[in-house]
Every structure is written in C-alpha cells, then in structure tokens.
Length: 494
Image (cartoon, rainbow, N blue to C red):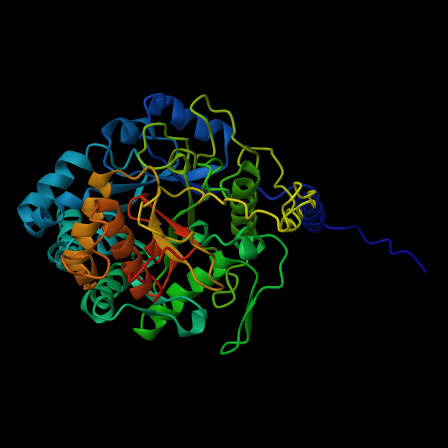
C-alpha cells in the first residue's frame, strides 16, 4: 500500500498520544469517607486533612457534627465537607432567628475557605426519633436553608441521611416503596424541597446488615449468579445496587425520580466478636474494594445506568471508644497511625484490586465413628451447647434449632439491660408493636427479665417491619440469628 506524504497535524498527534496515555495508566478517581471521632487515640484533624490531601484519592468527607477543629483543618484543601447538625437541634431550628444564629456561629466562620457542600439536618431521624421530631424535620430543613440564603450563602445544599428503614420492602427493587405514613407525610414534602433546592436525597445502604452465609458473594461484590427482577428484567449482581434501585423506585412512585441520590454511609467491619464471623479483613476489603471499583467505573445501577452515585465509605478510622460490639469499632479503612487496615486502592498510585473469586461455603466435618464402651448398645447423645446465647434457665427449654428461611432479631450477649430497656420503651411507645405478650399474664412474660422481654419485642419489631436486616440494629445492640428462640407458649415465629 502506498504511504501518504501528508504531514499529521500537531492536534491529531496530541489526541493520539493522549489516548495511549489514558489506556496505559490506571484511572484515578475519588471517593468519599465518613470521618468519625469516637476514639481517644485519633490523630489531630490538621494531620488528617494533610494526609487525605497528599496521600489518598479521598476528596470528600462527611462528619457527624459541626466540629470547628475539623472545619478549620480542611480549609483550602479542596476536599469537600458534609457537616451534620445534631438531632437535638431540630425543634429549635423551626425558629428562623435561631437558625440564622446557628449559621453565623457554626458555618460562616469557615465558609468558603472550607468547601462545605452539604449540611445534613440530623441523622436517621425517621429511624430513631419520636414522631414529634420526625414531623418537624422537613420544616427545620426549609428554615435552615432560608437561614443560609439570608446569610448570603446560596451554594450549600441542605439534606438529611436516612437508614433504609424508610423502605417497606426492597426485594425486588421494582416493587419497592416507602413506608405508609412516612411516604406522603414526610418523604414527599422532603423530596419536593430537595427538588426545589437541587439538594440530594441521602441514604445509608448497608448490605452488611443483611449478612447471610448463603448470599455472601452477592453481598461482597464477588462473582455470583445474581438476583433477577422479573418485572424490570434486570439482573442484580450485588446488593448495593439492589438497595439503591429500591430507593430510586420508591422515589419514582412518589414522582421524584429526578432527585439525586447519595450513598451517605456504607461499609463493612474488618473485625468482630465471635458471634460476628462475617467481620473479617478479607470481607471488608472485598466489599469496600468492590464499592470503589464500582464508583470509579461510573457504571451506575441497573435502573440508573452510567450514573456515578456519590458514595461515602464508613469509615475513615477504627474508633476505639465507639459503643457496641467489636464490629462497631472496626469499620475503619485506617488505623489511628494512618496505616491501612487493608489495601483497596485508596492511596494515590495504588492500583485497584481485582475482584476476589467466590469463597466456597465451609462444609462441616463429618464425625468419626467411635467405638462403643463395653456394655452400651447405643451411642450416647452428645450435649450441644447453645452458642453465643445466655441461658434463659427455663425448665425443659429445648435448644433452638435453625428454621429454614427464617431469621430472628435478638439482643447481642454484651447488650446491657439499660440498652435493652431503652429498646423496649422505644418499640412499645412509638412503633405500634403489640407488647402485651411480655406484660403480666402474657404468654412471654416469664422469665420476667429485661433481656427476655426485649428479645421478644425486638424480634416482633423486626418481623413486623418486613424482616429487613437493617431493622435489626438498635444502635448496635442486636444481631440476626437463624435459630428459633421460641420456648413453651412463647412463639417467636411470625
């Protein structure tokens, strides 16, 4: 073939070289992280800000207060910050004068040097607060936004994060909807406000709370056969996508599918108690690594294709004074000395890890036959202890047995009576759960202990709310089990 004598233009040469450069070098993106401070060994905010800026691809943080030291430390770093107004401030924020004074004291001294993008009014209000506070949430958001505008700030969005307890169901995503009452009473007005102000709808999707050994590959972004939604004909290969699409469909049912969604919290702990076998470094790296790969790819979800959903991993550090089980203190990507708990491509220049192959489920070892003692015609039945559960000391109470397809919400062994009493009070006062079985004369009154009563009531709440695993948290005092805890006349099955 005859070669052309035409010269290649410098612009075309530049495009050609640029294409080669992009293909040969790994794509560098960014990710958000929740910066919690419940630790007595954490580095000062100034060091944290410098470390994130110089060493990592993290370009967004979310904090759970309006900590002035953190806001001051992140000034001029280019790292975006989402701050949180505490839940207790919500009733007072209905007063525009108070809201303006709050902005003057906590936001204006740091803005715009610190790149505050979003102000969250409270955290998981619909999950934890009373109906009185819940009903004041949207008016407080509107008033706070007006306070920002009147203070000369018109670039900060106002929102609030939700647990996925706002969903009535999430499987299949195409049939998902918000809980009746909250849907039109609170969430529709909130979504209208977010549409008007171009603010994001913030949710906290945690596949971790849905842990099931049979579905671990689906939860951890490993290869799996997926879950097919027969109504939309979409195949889901991970639960994160499934949860986000459930939120999207619930918003769309109310007519607000155009409002941006932010995954404000999601993560997996690297260490837990003996009754939390899912909390391992391998699982945490697989989940958060898969999350980062997904975010960088910009693939979106089956119902929101090619949409890069802003995502915040929980969390930045292991926090050694956080209450609850060991898992609560081991969600961090980093230890307090800035060393990585595991590598997932968070550090600058560090490649993204390849997906881990699915891990085969462990098969129980078959017991070896033992010779019978002389004179015994049948082997003795071994005693099987009840793992991870305190004995209720009921007469002739059988050992709980796993029930196929059933899950139960029980107090963790280390949960205190004070925590469990608080759970009892909250469920029986605000949540419409029938607590008569644990009252005097009820089928589950005996044994008359806080733990026993809380076990039944917490499980009743979990079952009545649709058996979503995120409804079995109770500030870290509960755990999903597969053994039926029913006894005598007290039946835990729904």
